Each structure stands twice: as structure tokens, then as C-alpha cells.
Length: 234
Image (cartoon, rainbow, N blue to C red):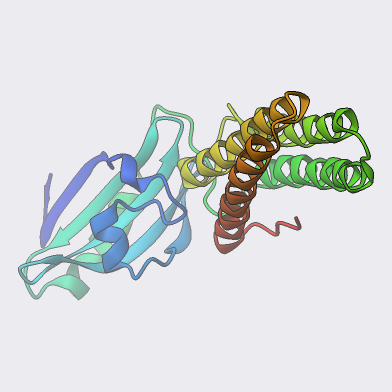
């Protein structure tokens, strides 16, 4: 769409915009991997505003990124060369009329997701501590296997709680990565318990090492959520 002093472009960002900045990879780099300024566009629609993002070839754009149930909707204002300041008021005025037929999500950390995340990880911590205590006290293979099974159930249960949530695109990738790591940890502990019952000491160690590596991935993705603004205690 042409407007006095530049052009306005509407569209849907590609899947790489499913991150806390709501920007696809190329624009996220231009924004320095930092979140934009939260703005209200009206009728419950919120966006991150990114002024003067570099597009290459001397071109810039002010981008509004709106998280919706169908991905990230974007509005980009591309001014004529040298007309950035003059075009800014027109851009902002048009942005306030932006509406979407999809369900809009608020920008920034979601309280509902934060509550679910804290509950799931808090439960995991308690179950893990109890199972690890039982494992350290195990004197038979059966006790060792049972305690390991409890570790498997703890991680798999957290993955089930966090999987399939209706989330903003800002949280989708981080949550998917966390759930994947939780499932991998649970699966490795499940196999380790099976090896314990089979009296395969080498197999138990192998699967236990896989579980430890997957736990490292869990910690990494929890740290990523903290970087996205979530106060995760785990």
C-alpha cells in the first residue's frame, strides 16, 4: 500500500519469528536480538514497535510485530529515502488501525504461562528431589529401578503439562524446546530403569549419561525462558 512519503506493507512473518522478539531471523539480527517497545494498537491488539530497522541497500523500516494465534502479523512502514522523520507520524497513525481476524496475544511475558511453568517446574523439582533421595539409598536393583522410574515419570509428567498449551508465538519455540528436552530426559530415565531390571550395569550407565545430557538441555532452555522475561525458579 502506498502512502504519502513511503509504503506500508502488511503480512505474516515466517516461522522464525516464533521467538521473544517476534521478528524473523534477518530482522531480529537488525534489532540486535532485543525486544521492541510495547505499544497498544487498539481493540486489545498489542505489538512490539521497532523503529528504523535496517533492510539493506540503505533502506530502513519501522516494524510492528503482533503475536496472534496464527503466527506473527507484521506491519512495516518503509519510508522514501531520506524521509524517515516525515513518514513516522503517518506510519504510527496507520498502525493504530491495524486489526487481525486471529486471536491476538499480549506482548511480553504471559502471566498464565508463567503460572503454569512455575507450577510444572516446581512439581518436577519436588518429585526429582524425592526420587534422587530414594536412588541414593537404593540397596537392590529393584529399588534402583523403581527410583529411576520415578525420575522418568517426573520429567515426562512435566513435559505432558507443558506440551500442547495455547501460547503466543513469542513463547512457542522456547516452550517446544523445553518440552522436547523434558521428554528426552524422561525417556532416558525410563530406559535406564529397564536396564537396571535387566541387570545390565553398562546399559544403566549409558542411559543414565543420556538422561544427564538431556537434563543439561532442560537447564539451557529454562535459562532461555528467563532471558525472555520469565522468573523461573528451578
